Image (cartoon, rainbow, N blue to C red; front, side, top):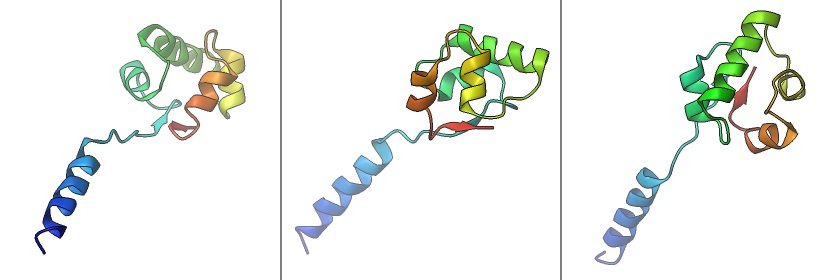
Length: 86
């Protein structure tokens, strides 16, 4: 029993410390949320995503996002595949 308790406590600590990525809907989120949740996307690129969306409508998918927003390429989309929603 004494060996189990430290193991459980360590597991709980690791679980709480691990970063959980949240998905972000690039067709609804503001620039701050996009920049916060997407890897490799800072404030400037996030603002470009919002501006493009407002000007030309929602994005269909990752390829559409990469094609329409300068600085967002296939590598950025791939890196964020589990974080992107449309």
